[in-house]
Amino acid sequence: MFNIFLSRFDKFNWFIFMLLLIVRTQIFYAFDPTFYINKYSDVPRNDIAAFYHYINHGFYENRVCAASFENTNFDWQYYVKTNNLNISTENEAKDHYDDIGKIENLQYCKEFKIGILLHLYSLDLMNEFIDKINHFIKINMLNDFYIKINIPIGDNINKHLDLSKDLEFDQERFNHILNQTPYHKNLINNKNYQILYDISNKLEYSFDISKNRIQIIFSENRGADIGGTFLLFDQIFKEALHLDYIVKLHTKTHYPWRQVLTSILKLKVNKLFNYYEYIDTCHIPAESSIPDLHFVNNRLLKYFNLPYYKYFGFSAGTMFITSMKMINFFKSYDLLALFHELNLGNYFHSVPGIKLEHAYERFFGYIANYLELEQKIIGYIK
Image 1 (cartoon, rainbow, N blue to C red):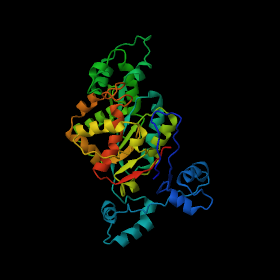
Image 2 (cartoon, one colour):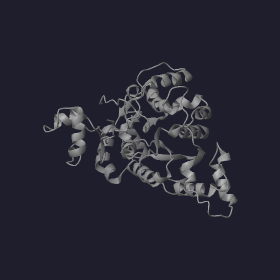
Image 3 (cartoon, rainbow, N blue to C red):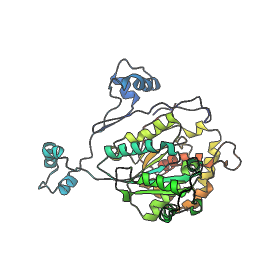
Image 4 (cartoon, rainbow, N blue to C red):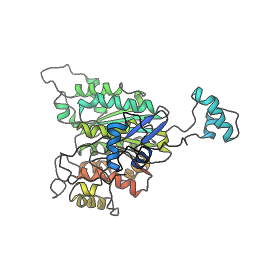
């Protein structure tokens, strides 16, 4: 892990470089500078320089950037029971899988239930995120997926409205959109419901999973991507939906950031789940990145009655995978009240330049530490 710092959060002359993760058939790689330096004599003897050597040269030369995980997914008892085999020992099961199971693609480990939560503000990025999510589903086809999407109603919708057209009112479509707006029905009107219906209809039929596992909700635009995340958490709890892992995403508009953050969707996750309960796709020591952020963090921790830890470990705009242990932390709190504490454009109390959602973006990293989750950081920011 690199100890890389930004002097100030609002200096836009700093750029994001690609995080290193490569999927090779059944093997997941995350960049390991020590491994890479030791394996190749022509690589610079410096962690950061080695990182950029791999980006610029090693990747294109198909160099190995980290040791592979051993495949410990194989659950011989699960394999025998699921495939109705007359086998009584682990060695027999492994031999059977090597000789027959691989060829017949027999299931050999547990299926996970994975929820993908997408805060879709930028409609211009909708197709890109559809493609990336479908790729993630395809390379993790062993699992069951559920997709929940929050779309805030604001300028992102208004700029797509064609007020010159006088469309005939469709009560059925209007009611459909009302049902997808459980929190802020007052935002739906005769002008915008048609475009909301078109967006919803496209999303419901664009993903490579059953339509009944996809939910779209429209809401007030509040709290950047954090507000929508709380509403999607609330939907999970209301449905009593049991999930093993959550993938948290949002439509980050800055291209270099987005490329790093959404590269989490290139992961084959099953092997990682044997080792980790929380996977962070981007990392900056938060206390060094925004001056006085610790003040906002402290106020947030007091709200949840939690002890102060200096390390939060998240950057603004974080996307990650986590087990439901983290999500269930919020179960005892009023998520709608938390949602209304967020207000896009208003600063947190009297601290200039610091928003409450900035603290929340780092709060997930805090909770991972507080709950003692096994963690993996797979991305870096310079």
